[in-house]
Length: 320
Image (cartoon, rainbow, N blue to C red; front, side, top):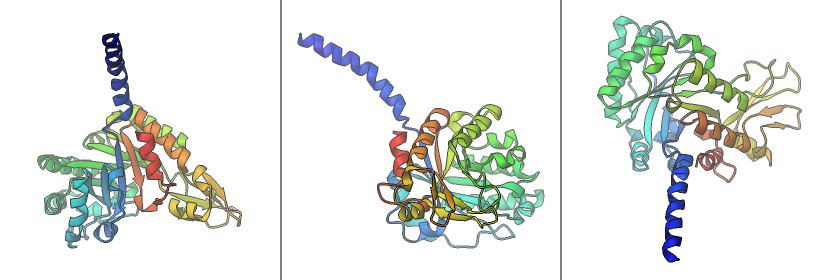
């Protein structure tokens, strides 16, 4: 009888354990953008155990392509990150315009700029470079820049990633996209303060489905090379179309409006409606990312709260 019981237990374990391993997805990425200034100063409460990658934003050169600022103060942050098996990249570019990149990526300037950029990696013990050139910063030299930067990083056995979006999808060539170890899809900012006449949700679940479908199916990026970008902030509109829109971090929203963590929009006393992602939607997006991608990307970690209403905590629970 005992032998029969032991056999049944062993049989069940052979069935259940592989299913559990598949559900856990141990390679699931949680990529968080975090400011350089914060990383060089007080980061005692940084959630190292809840992320796999950190993209420090933004490290941009001067107009000549030189990096003159001293970033040695990053050493304690990077050391602690590595102790927790967290990879640290620096991100170049950003959502605003950087006209000097058009000059630096030309044939006569590109090699020197890439050399300066690559030199930062061993100097500060970084794990790679994140390319966040957006919109008008992407020109005819973007592809060759990415190809040459990727080549240099691969020689150092380091990562190259990118933040991309459907807004400028036609500016991203297949060859350029193929250079990245993985891409972070910015699935937010469908609207915002720059479009007060277009009130509503700026980062819906439906948007996430659409973006993963486009980059995964139409552009052929493997699921294992995509993360789904989610916002830790919201935009408020109204009460009239001419009213100026407002932005708030998720932390500010839940601190001011009890119960707001459970929904995706909140009507204020002024009549303004704030649109964001609450815990249920964040969990739902994480499940989607487990099925259709390889992780979640967050803009940005400073927008979260440290209490039980934390979005990062919700992502971790849904991921595992």
